[in-house]
Image (cartoon, each protein chain N blue to C red):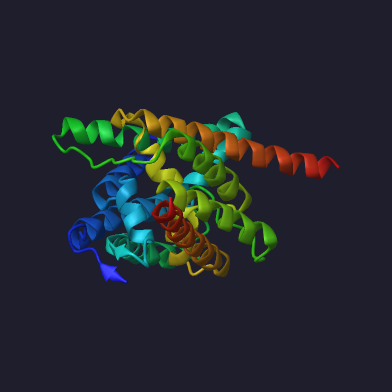
Length: 141
Length: 145
């Protein structure tokens, strides 16, 4: 139970961070991506702050066998920079540029009363489902 | 390039970034997981029942964040100016792309860079470049129309 509460609180802190930083403001995100126009560099500070704190956590836990709650630490086991990573990231970048939304802030906007965030998240889930489905079909074929 | 000083908010953005980093730090230290939203959501579509509960608890916190902020008297800035059709197109691309590329801004962009993963650093450079290119192209198209 304490683990469930912990995960909930992590999600909540993350959500507050997204709201405070400006990541849920899609116009601000597009202002950051607009490097050739009137550029708003604020979001570089978001990444700076976020990487700064988590860097030490990843350093400290690097050689741990399990987490403080006794769970197996699961990092990515993929090492290769392959076409899936490159093409997937490019497609994601295009969608991010078009909307100003990436997955976290989109989900953190759901209870804001803005119907458009539901539309975006629904389309995002369909996109994820389609990719998972196409991978399964390739495995079968 | 010109700086948009009117919108520039380094203090709020840095403070928000620290909260995001704190969440990612607690998640790896206590829960042993990478705080990557697309992976956590994507796992809901395919994982077992036991694996689903931690994903749902995390997402519940994330979803309720603006509601709780509003109760605390803080009105979060949420601006969505795009039309519905572009949001649908963008949502499909974001979902498909993060699933194929195994991560998004939180998993690759924050956690991956923090643990100096070459895969994540590559992914972040690519999605940032393509997002900037897309914004540039959309500005061109809109200026021409």
